Image (cartoon, rainbow, N blue to C red; front, top):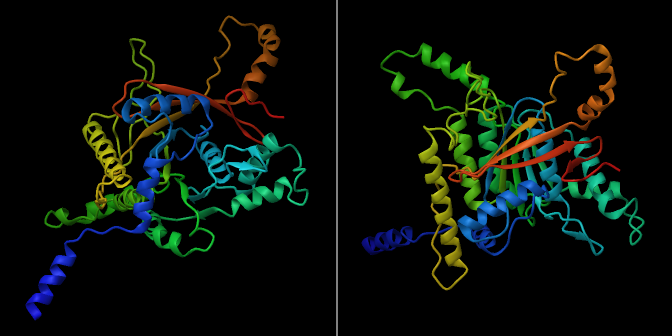
Length: 392
């Protein structure tokens, strides 16, 4: 009797299982798109690459991982704000298309720079652009109240270390299942601003441990805490399939200006480790492999929507990077050396217009694809302006 019980338990243990949340996320990834970014140049480029790879003519797939890298004051946080606004807004309101995703969003504010009042202003401005000053169908619900209602679906965490960030990500599955304001909403975006927040502290700690260790114990040195963050991100990506946006500092250019006149590269080296680096020689093969693996998982999900029996998704530690965006403030050329003071004063107004415009340029790279996308946006007083938008 005991042997048969053990055999039955062993057989049951071999039956693959997965959570209902994982199954639903898999089905959604094949049956509907997450939504548009509403940045025309970015949407156009992502859709053109996506249709070549997957025959889907939409820009984003559920589970996509996007890295946003750039120097200080290059617009990384405001690009995340723009995506959060897009995610939180409903698709339509009182018959008016708003273009939102109508989903919940998670923000890990590792840098400590998140300003909820600023995000509220951006939401109000986006609503005003579509609805005007007031909603005639519901005078009691003003734009300020609508924006506040949207913010109810934003969940902000403020980790103060890589360990706290990893634990937060590991606990998000349970948080999603038990938090009343979240459990009935799909997580559309998971954003971390920024992945580099604890870089110098972690590097210093690991160097101190390494220097203090003797030769016999160096083989057992602890892993970089970022490893646990990457593992947690990969696990959450498989179970919930949010669009993940990771901002990252741009510290070291891929190449610097040379004596023969070659320009400095607009791209940056990947200083984080372990972290996807598909555009550098040491990480190219792994980056393409993780992209391929993620596409196979999507193919598995596609089988679920048909008659084939379901198969469980196997968790992988590798985090695929589907899109890399490098941001730079648009440069303004200095006055020529031949300019006189009178010439400079004559052109002062035109130059001040360019400075105040504050345009930011984004360069888009996709692992395994040689085409380079480009888009621009501007950070206004009340809005993140994309395409031909102008502040009212």
